Length: 107
Ligand SMILES: [Zn+2]
Ligand SMILES: [Zn+2]
Image 1 (cartoon, rainbow, N blue to C red):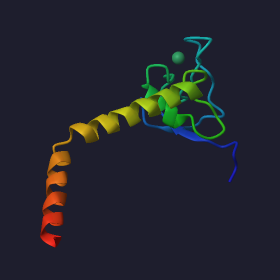
Image 2: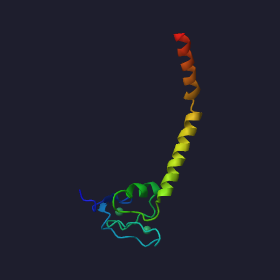
Image 3: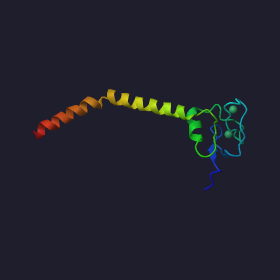
Image 4: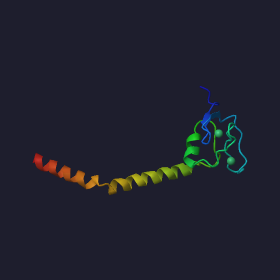
């Protein structure tokens, strides 16, 4: 396996292309993204989730847009949401009820 080869799928035309050979766009010099060689669309209008997924491997598809701290912040937000969901879940009180009944039967 060659680490230098990394194919990405264009969000616009769904063609696979070699990210290493693709050129950077010039929309924002601070945050350039790769330009699709088939439809000549850059990745700038693609959503952050797509850019994050496309960023794995040796080649950056969106430079500087996805920082490590922003990923950590997203993870923390997802964890908080999961905790809140468990607390407000309608299954919560029901499970406690069932556990009490089981304890009563074994007594
Ligand atoms: Zn394309
Ligand atoms: Zn662009």
